[in-house]
Structures are given as structure tokens and as C-alpha cells.
Image (cartoon, rainbow, N blue to C red; front, top):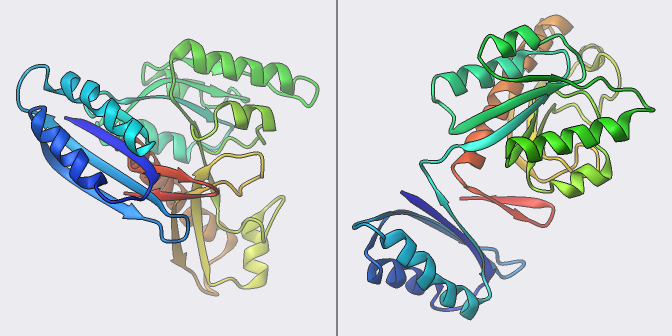
Length: 279
């Protein structure tokens, strides 16, 4: 099956044009969702379709070009059977990495992990035991530009579409964020920007917080302020020590990051300015 994603200025006849084109070209709609943003006037649509005869998918792609021009659409077609080629970046912590490796190994995520790169050598054995290439890219303030050039080269050489910051505890440069805009997903605890710096869970404990959680978002030049993809919160109380909060936080981070990757791999995310539309 294939996934058509499009967005354009809203106008009459878009849904009808898409459905008619699919029918005429011998394709069957399996799933369809659309959203008209009343504030911007932008229309978003995601359609999963199956060709009913050989070559119907290529015929539709060619036929749809004229429709896209007519409505001035930004559009893309993806083969649902092809997993998203993915590069994972990590530092020392392994909870998100471990979770993604498990979901990848058990086919619970439609991603193809091309490699894992890290600024520490801590997780080499974990990665290589899964038969995945591990790249140790040490980092200092003086070597940051060169190290990021290595990351960019690795993205290109592995053919990775998506870069996942699975608790990669480094700030990406503005240049790297712009180069791979909409292709880098980060995870962080929901305390930011309230509790910055070292030991955020100890700070939260001292303040007596009642909710902790995590946010997955696209990385941008504005630290931890990129378009949000997925979020989750969990309740805590005075009995939760900083260590217990941290353990719960790690589980939440892993779940939310996996959810974001699932949404991305199913081609459900549309970037819309500084926010996302999820269909």
C-alpha cells in the first residue's frame, strides 16, 4: 500500500479530486483523514491506498501531478512497505536506545536502523550485539564543528531519512538543525524549561511537583522548543523520591519517543509553522 500526503490552501473540490484520481487510476482508498486549519486556511490530507492492478500506483503518481499543480499542493507519496532509514544519536544513557532496539528487532516500529552514533563509547556492545554499526564520535567544544560534519556525512552515507536523538545530551548547532529540518526528532523530560541544568528530578522533588512527563519534538535552533509531536504526563506525589521520579521519567521518555517515531514512520506528521498536524 501507499501513503499520499498533501497540504495546500483550502478550496472546494480537493477531496473529490483526490478520490476521483485514485478511482480512475485503479487504486482503492484504505484510509483517509483530512483537516482544515481555520486560522491559516491550510488544508491537510493523508490517504492510504492500494493499487488494484500492476502499475496502478505509478499511473496515479503521474496522473496526480496535474491535480497538485491545479491546487498548488505540497505533496508526497511513500511506499508503506519501506521502513524509514534511521540514524540514532546517543550519549551515555541507554533507556531510549534499548527500547528502540527492541521495537526495531520485534518489528514494532517501521524503521530501519542504519547506524548508531555516540559521543561516548558506553553503548557500543549493546548496539553491536544487535548487528548494527556503532560510530564513536568524541566531542569537545573545539571539535564540535568537525564532529557535526561527521554526523552529517553519516546521515548521507547511510541514506538515513530520519535522525533520532535518543537522549543525545548535546545541543545541535543551528546549521545542522536547518540542514535536516523536519528530520530530527528529540526527546526531553517535561521539566524544561522549568528545571534546567543538573539533576532536574532532584529540583522537581524539592519543589514538590505533582506531574512529570516527556515531550518528543522536531529539533530546531531554539533549544527544546521545536514543533511538538507527542507528549505524556504521569502523576507523582510526596512519596516519590528523586530516584523513583527518574525511573518513571525514563519509562515515559522511552514511550513518548517510540510514539513519535511510529507517527513519523506512518507518515502522519505534517509540519505547520512551529506546530504539527497529526493525521
